[in-house]
Image (cartoon, rainbow, N blue to C red; front, side, top):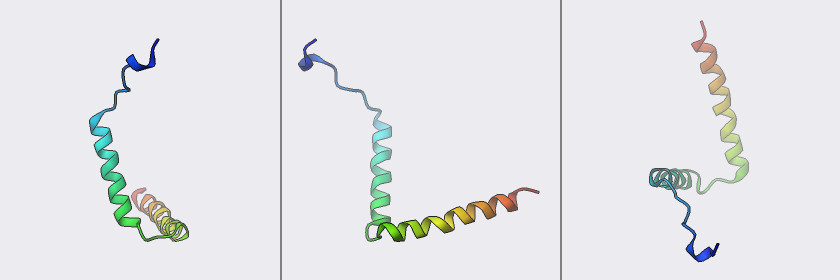
Length: 58
């Protein structure tokens, strides 16, 4: 089959719009942060999730 006549892959428009929005938000939020600083931000998030889970369980 000739490649010129193949149909282009279908992409869900909503998914692509969401991906662009997420990328823009992340870029604006973390644009000036180094990788090591971003890793430091992740540690409290994990700890907070554990604490929330402990408080939610009776």
